[in-house]
Length: 378
Image (cartoon, rainbow, N blue to C red; front, side):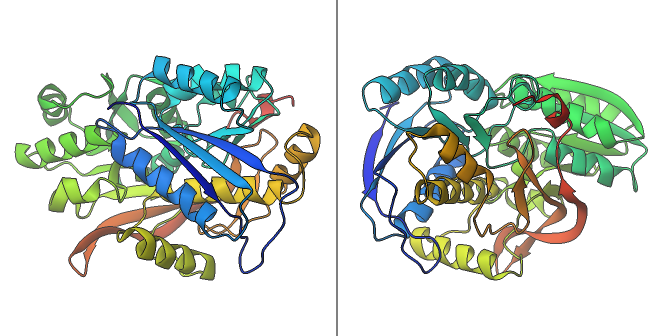
């Protein structure tokens, strides 16, 4: 079935302490659990639910449904969750086109939305809203980090992304910081799996580097075909292009690829080590960026719910803005547009103990915000 409903009533725990809820809270999670983007949604769901499960309070309910990566279905689910399921907060959407379809209607009906991933520019600037928070980043951010990194060794870049809001934001972000020559800027179909034509363009482009933003099944298909093509131009991308959810499927073709992100499993902090150990114990696999972002989104919601009633929107928003959490990624606070200010890193795909993963190479940005906050007037 394309649509799956899972209802879980879980508890609340922040660190080692148990905090009473201001009142019961119902969360609606809409995410992708089928099709080519399912791996992203599964990690989103599992990271979020890990934070919920670390609890001993029965006042939290999470209702989860599969959007099948279809905007019209996501809108139908959101309306049902708001009008029939009476959720207080929405979360979980992976894809920016789905988020753009859901958020305006949700906030118009007085519901908070806390994003676990999708972060289109349109909702970060003039289209920002007091009820919309992003716990992940702003779409441009990780790509900006790769643009800055590419300045070191690459004079001519071929850049590629899917033709949807996050894809356009990604290449805009890369170009914002990259000072060399972009020899070709290509947008592909969302969900595309055959990249023969684009790889032929890369071969003939004269580029000395390739930047791709191809999350989920798109990135798996591209990297496999690229490895078989014999083209030897270095490939780099944001953490999504080489995240833990896709590395097993890409295989050794990913080894050595540089990426950018807010977190990888080798972070040497207490919060990161705990999250990593807890996630592996619960799900028997390494977590991806999607899981970390969702874990923090749940922490943020829970921290606010412990101190304020969601029925008092101003009080609940004030508590969310405090970002009173211990994030595995380290430094985390909200910008004036309710998107993160955080550190960003360059990472490299390696094989450790027979498992493909990412390791930290260097910090590229400290306390990095986004280019649109200045246009947000909330």
